[in-house]
Structure formats: structure tokens, C-alpha cells
Image (cartoon, rainbow, N blue to C red; front, side, top):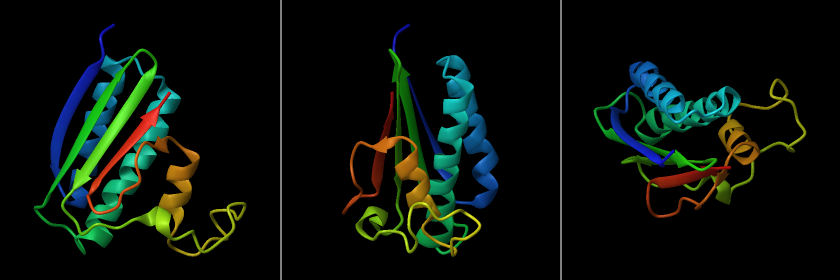
Length: 136
């Protein structure tokens, strides 16, 4: 099967989470991505999107968020781009040890914990608002 690639734009509004999930699920079905990988990727994508809206834009806005999914030959890539001010969450470690349970953690740092334990970023966000995750 040749590699598939799909791109979609979503407004940075929390009510667009459903459309984002549907876009991912459609891609996973078409690309025959295993259900567990699709579910994990959905968690990562929801975390990125929610953080963009809440922390990057300070709430719902009409700013664009671009998501590109591509895959083939057992690999899946997610490219996530937004227009919020750049932020490097990997530059500051979470405020709790990695073995701390989710219930024990303070608010914040869960996205870093999630993305570090899921697909590995192919690049570290710095001055641009693009993050690429690869999954094999």
C-alpha cells in the first residue's frame, strides 16, 4: 500500500476537538493503523490541541491549526503546526518525577509526560510552531 498523506486545518477552538478526532479516525481507518496506536495518537493530538487553545492563544480563537498525518510501510507521522507563540516544553522538565502517578501530579507537565512516553518527536520545537512525531 502506498504511503497516505492527509492535511486538515482546524480553528483553535475547543469545540473543534471532535472534528480533529474524526479526521484522525478516518485516516487511521484508511491507512489500516492499529486501534491502540490510533488511540494513543489521539491522546497526543488532543493534548497538543488543547494546549494550543488554552495556553498558546489564551482561549478559543480563529487562529489556524494544521495537522498532517502520513503513513505507510509500518510508520506513522504526525506534523502539528499552530500560530501560537513558540514554546519548548522539552526545555523545562516536569515538576514531578516520572514515576509520580497522574493523580499525584500537580496540574501541568502532563503533556510532556504523555508525549515522552508515546511517539518520539522527530524534532524539538524551538522557534517554530511545528512539531513532527514519528511512530513505528
